[in-house]
Length: 399
Image (cartoon, one colour):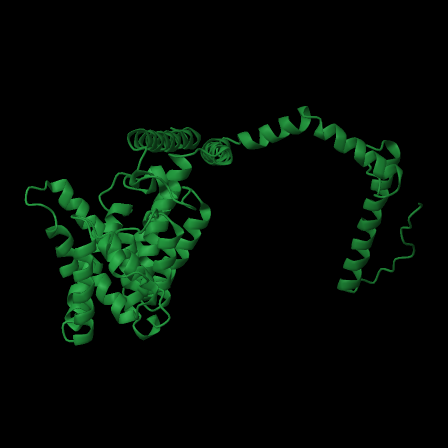
């Protein structure tokens, strides 16, 4: 077996392996896109109900461990809450926290400690128990759930006011508490996708609570993903103002927030959320709204890769590229155009005319130049050896 035959067999084997790998990768990608058109993961990315449940847990935990413990040691706040609870029981309806709107006519006029005490009381204290205990003994489970939601909604309204209180700088944790309470039970007609919830978390992050920036990024990722993820904005209910899915600005803001968290104690969670965001972006391009530019670019890349493989493993070893280039130059008309353009430049004396097969005159000129060179070589050699012969005449150019 000669070297040429061996080289061709090696090229054929490499080409077969390359084409097989490309085909296998293409089939795997097709199966993946066919089987998975939505991101259906347990906690990646975190949908809005998951964010809400975590926010509810954090809000109740902070109220029970911090605010309510301090409340029991302050007689003024204890008396304030007792008076409000008494008025709410008299004016309220069973299973509802509307009595507190009557007991506290102007909530923004309250002081920051009073807002925190009342909000935490409705979130995880005796006020929430009063709302659920006001139901009749034969109330069903749905009524109990509605009563708890009513108490949490009232707590979110009060704690959201506390987060924007002028004295919140004295207790920065109130900003995070208000954001968690608002995300737990969005007040009014707000949704967890709304800008108001995101702004609340971002204010908490600027106040020094990195968890606020992380929660804001999670809401932005869920809003950007939209229907491409389970438990996203579309799943959570009707979208609020500014909650359009697929807005690139949401992805950009979320990425900026997460990158700032890579140097904090939340670096692991931030890194995971960045991967989730990248995957959502890929799914939005591939599995969501197909973009014509992306399709064209993908087709161009696939074609270029195939051409590159062909040139590298087939055309180059078999010298097909040179013959293909010669054929294309001749039959495409580029060669004729180049010759005509060269003749125009020669006629204009822009370039020196080429002499090719110039006939007898060209041959004579070449012969004279050869003779002159031969004579010069003889003279140079004689001088080098110190010859006694003297060259009388030199060969002169008759031109």
